Image (cartoon, rainbow, N blue to C red):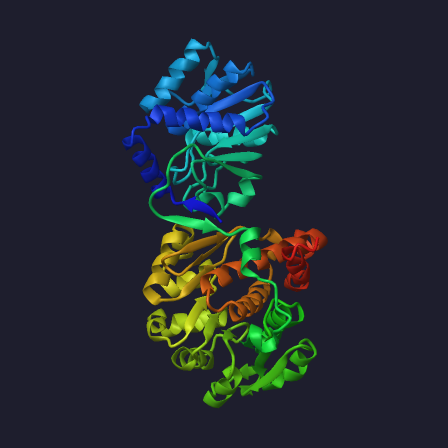
Length: 498
């Protein structure tokens, strides 16, 4: 796993390094050298510098380009505001590097490469004025763009920013930050590499789960094992308007083999004839219902969860009082791992998330930002602007694992937080969450002793399956069912059967 530092932790790390005897001027020079060495430069290069330390990285980069015989110019916002940036600006003057103020720049016609050094990871809000104009000029240029540390206009903590540079390569300095993955990151960064410049990390960090980490979690299965070894799961959900939801979860869990030994599907009795044709490998548990919606029945619920390691509840269940009663009963009585998704989350919001504190089961919640906002009694904007802290605070207070969906997925138990960056635009379609619930139930049943890691691995597998599905179907025409059907290929690749 790679470490991902919050912006505040990166500031603390910088300050600690400087206090420990490494001058800020030297760190700026190291950053410029790392950017310089990460790129095959095509001259002439326009180095676009802001007034702060990110601009200072640009001045230092321009010096290295000139010393290497690579033609470049500096396009400056104005007078640098930090001593380190002023040092390298003066060095540029000594090297007779041409400098132009932004107001004189109307296009990039004479250049082949642009180095974006306007704003750093501390940027927040929205780029305006001359900065916005310059960002728009960069984006319209059609040239190769290299961003220093993070794309100008993007918030390093959450990846938001309506006006942002679109880069071909972003060279993160010191450590990756959440803004390299969250929010708009994937839309504006084609490739991200990190450059270690010798700053020991301090403070709070996240972990980025990658393919090798998922492989390490999925050991080879012994010949001397059976279906009971890998756990029984029950998927509870479905209603007349949403009969496909429970079928998608079942397909992902059993037929597409995400790892559970036995899968049981609990659905409204009147829908069972429809559901049965989709679940050849699963057993079917009819639930009491009225007009296609499940009714609360302690006897039915107890029968559905009997002997299971994991219960996933909510996929297409319907936002009803009966659903709330079922969630409340499961929290009070089920002793396995309970996954709440979709209408299960809506029910929890209505009951009150504090009920989690007295739950007898271990709980995993899988909200998208809207569902998490309802659980947290806040706005979606609040969630998008501060996803890491809000997810961690909620998980810590309520004693649950949060899987917060988005362009990247956050998984946290309040103490340890992981990111997965797999997934694609084609997954923005109905049913994608139901497929994830099926995968998640299987992984949690197989790996119950490491629930946080199992949850993160399920998110990674789901995202990777979506990417493979999009390659075959396109971002427009793929469906959640395509993601489920791509799962065998993901597990084949994870077993190195390429």
